[in-house]
Amino acid sequence: MRATILAFCAALVLSLAPARAASDAGSFVKELGDRAIRVLTVKDISEQQREDRFRELLREGFDVRRIGRFVLGRYARGVDPAVMDEYQRLFEDLIVATYAARFAEYSGQNFIVKRVVKSKGGRDAIVLSEIRPSDGGPPIRIDWQVHDKNGVLKIVDVRVEGVSMSVTQREEFATVIRQNGGKLSALIDALRKKTIGLKSKQASR
Image (cartoon, rainbow, N blue to C red; front, side, top):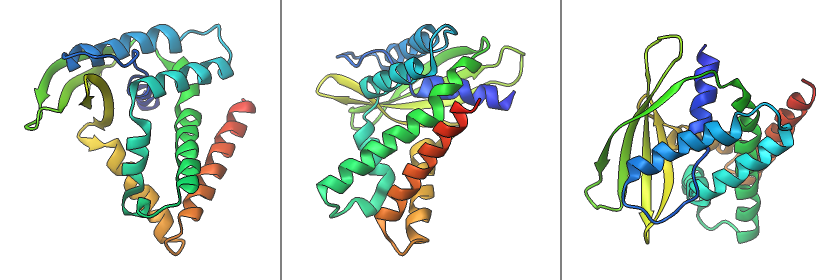
């Protein structure tokens, strides 16, 4: 059951209605759940089609490059632009390979937006929501950090039960780099290998 809930969290976290000017971050986030269910959990599409839809929605709804740079942390300083582009491409590929195939696991969970809390600066809003399992189990809290950039809304972080996905990923990436002498190339190699491994595992199913 836990795996199913996490798969649905992934569907909501990484699927979004097209970014547009809007003032209501709560409605913006609510739309993502509806569209995730509508276009990514259907059974009669190939895994490649699911991946393609997933990647398109990810790019539309999330500030992927901002998240990728935040996740890299201090190791992003002074990186050659070509190397950064390669890292960002692999970062996106890993997200797609990790989550796209899980959308078929959706089994009727309910996604409910509770309320919206504006940040002090006014540029960001935190949308408080929860996923209620179809079996009556305890709800899972998910908080969405939505950034307003010139009237266009983008999600820049998601916290599941209070744990930031971006911060968690940042710590994992930093560990890989530290264990390999501070070399960003080691992380890039690890991302490439992990993505290839995930794709091979999915192809063998």
